[in-house]
Image (cartoon, rainbow, N blue to C red; front, side, top):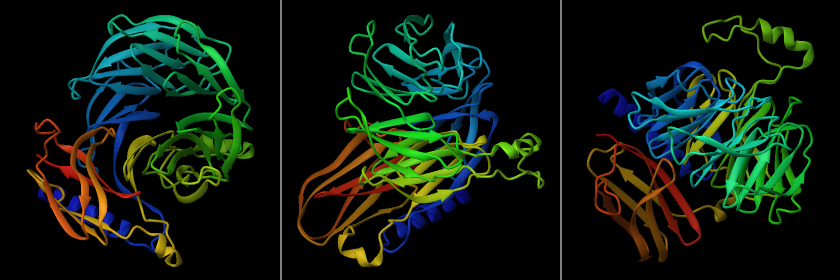
Amino acid sequence: MKVKLGFIILFCNFVIFFTSQSSIADSIVRVGACATPGVTWNIFVKDTFTYVTDRSRTTIVNASIPSNPWVVGATSDVRALGIIVNDTVAYANSIGLINRFEIASVSDPTSPYRLGFCYLSAGGMGNPTGIVLKDTIIYLATGNAGVMQINVSDPSQPDTIKSYSSITAIDLALVDTLLYVVGGLEGLKILNIADPLNPILLGSIPIPQANRGVFVVDTFAYVTRYGDGYGALIVVNVSNPTTPQIVASADNLKGDPCDVWIQSHYAYVAAEDFWFPGSLSKKHMRNTSSNNSFAQRADEEGGLRIVDISDPLNPTLIASYDTPHDPRGVFAVDTLIFIADQESLQILSHVGSGVEEDKKKNFIDFDIKVHPNPFLESITIKCSLPKPENVTLDIFDITGRCVRTIYYGHKEAGTHSVQWNATNQEGFKVSSGIYILRLRIGSEVLSRTVILAK
């Protein structure tokens, strides 16, 4: 354990050092990885656990120590392409595998088991992953069979209540009562689901090539374009859902972009390897074993792409990282990026500011330091302010939920110190794992990843 903690301390110090420099370019570093038993397809992160759909099973990985994640449980009863977790229940999209929707208990991550399922008469073309939950209704992407709505008020007996079959659905995003759907060559469609029994198509827009990933933030939808080896992230203005409009794109991402996750003002894109038609025989011959030195390289290697979307009208590719295999799913928490990479879970970190020397005047001129990290009982947080400012210091868990507000108010210029004793807002001890300290000063924000190791 001492060796692991020592490595984490070095890693965290590395991240803190480099993210505080104003001249370093954005970059991606590998933090850790672990093999998974099946073909990894999609991913969901909650607390210290990462839920991986392995097609032939669902695998649960403990990522409380990002440099050394390990498989703690799996169930072959739940085969899935897409997954979400709410409380202690996992909902799985198995369309295209066994054409059914499945629910699993993950209250004990070491022993997940199926709670219930229902068969669906769906085509499943395109390996759909989309699955979202609103109240007690699951919205499920089913490929060429459209979107299905399933009542999950009784997890042991999920029941199909409605289908919207006039569209193709590969991925979904939900914002309030608006459901955003992408699938194949049909572009982006926006449904109003205020009345679950009467979904209404509000608007749609065709997008060049095929699309299989969508993420919506504020008034913009970010859609991945794949199928030509060059790939792109398409930005769609959805401020008026009846008339969505393409406003920008980050082109030439290379590979086949599949999934996208938005964190802060960055878009993290998982792109598969791409083989041009004349190279398909090489792909079929390839042995994907990591120990095979004769494995063929794709014409365009897949991996993680980071796009700066601070200005949605000018999205810019700022960093790329070729993962060992074929990434299809991505989930980001603060500076950590979790990738479903065909044979493994890869954990990467986005470091660097992307700010050039001649732009120092625009760089955040305050800092935040933490010690010790990892910590067992409490952690000291120090902040240096160049001038009096309004300050907010919050603690978030790995899902993005605020567990504690440490300080809110005005601070004078100088160095300030505060301790967090690993308790939530109600004074109860929080569980071990990864947490994010987020310091907001005026209109600027800094964050640090810390690890509570018990």
